[in-house]
Image (cartoon, rainbow, N blue to C red; front, side, top):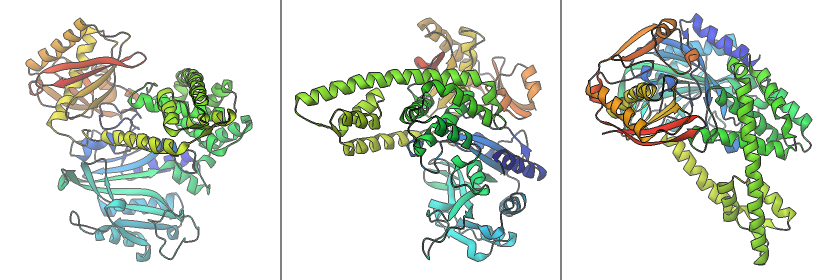
Length: 583
């Protein structure tokens, strides 16, 4: 069964069970400050999990494009991906454990044809915050899973929360038995020997965690996630996602073109190319900060491994075309942005080749200095400095060192690189703090202020100025917008004055639900209009701003305080960034 068939079966199954199919949110979140990229299906739905009414009702299903960055350096093995697709269904205060489990079991066994004896499940074992989930276990027994294949684990395994605070709850996970022998008598779904593979996770979201304490949400929700690539691999009996139709044509082409084959390098090229294309199609561009840096890193790592495979870089357009042609049925946006995707990747590749050349010059300075000192070992700190400052890959340093009769001591490099990774992960995790999951007066005020800033920029710069992204914490707001020049002091003052004038007027903020086409006819603005469902939520601020948005917002602009621009700077090519505070 192909991936697109699995996706369509999933969406149609839940549609037939009363769910509305909603479009995938873009990889680059709109008005969502929580993370650099959309990392889970629930992320765009947090306001509705907290009680806000969704325009499409209480039963929803979709496929969600996701990108997670913590494991970039693990890509190349047989399982890690940065971009992946998550299938999900939600109950927003509607059904709960029994109906959710019944539908999951039916979909796995009847729609996908997985034998019931291949399925094991796990439930929450209970602790001082939440009791043992006997209800879920009973529901699985009723559905058809015997007691001996129902396991109980603690919070580390069977509790789900995005970040340190927000909506959360116990979950139940479904595992597929691959048929491999048990690694020991104690081999269970929690074991990572490869016998059991997690295929689905149903979260019973009825709690909210803040300051280490759990309180009940105003409504009980169900939030599920099924990874499409993993399910495709298992149903096709493949060993890795790279053996499925999502990757295999590119993998085969890379093998054909490579003068020096290496399967890990081929996987890195195929995966990073797909991830980069998806980000670019949703508006991402390379830069030295935040998501732009992640995109730059993906393209550069891909280029590095094309070089390692000794593939002529002039073949890159051909490889991009092949990748788009494979995926365009699933992601039509790749085809419609084909030229942009090629331009961005090829331009970044060209820049990186210059970086490599520059790094090689710096490397030559290093070995000349060491030769003069009678040293024939390049220490790890020097290797790391070449990597961090010039983007010069350690494996290239190692190869060049050997060619010049030097040794490369990578032990210290590995230590420094791990510190670098840990800092990056901490930074990535920090993105979830202060996000939509942390709705408080400050973040809601900043969210509202982004609408006023957007409106002010249109008046000062021109109507073609549009939002390109935002990020909010309890301390500040950050707003990206397209603009071809650095704002003058006069322009910044005009923007500030306009926003503060509208705040002083204490304009009312109204919300209404309408058809998407009616919202557009009324003049409402948004990013990625094609990604919105047929029914949308429109927020209007006096006669100043009208935007499609998930909310939440304050009731009157007078609640915001005084708006002040702290900094204005470049974000990426053609995109400027304003950092501002509310005093």
